Length: 120
Image 1 (cartoon, rainbow, N blue to C red):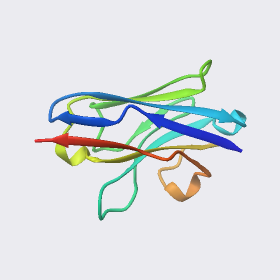
Image 2: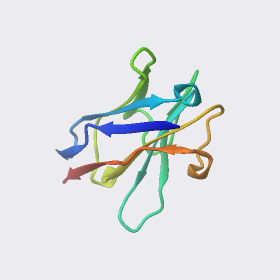
Image 3: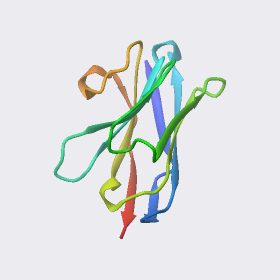
C-alpha cells in the first residue's frame, strides 16, 4: 500500500504563487510516476502535471506550473506561479508504478486533496 499526504494549499490572489507538496510512504517502489490532478466544483477531475524520469504538463498550466520531486524524501512538489481564478480547485496527488497517463483512472493511489483558491 501507498499513502499520499498533500499540503500547501490555501487562498491566494490572482497572479500569486503557491507550492504544493505530496509526501509518499509505504510501498514507494510503486510511486515511480507521481502526478497532480485537480477538480473544480461541478467539473471532472483533470490532469495537471506528472513526473517520472521526465515531466509532462497540461496545456493550461505549461509555463506557469513546475513539478519536481525529492526522491530522498519521497516527496513531489507542484510550484504554481501566475495563478488564475480558474486554477481554483481541490488538488490531488496520485501515484502509479510506471508510465505517465493523463487519465485519472490509471492511478491506483491518491491523497486526500488540498484546496487551492485563487481570488480575482
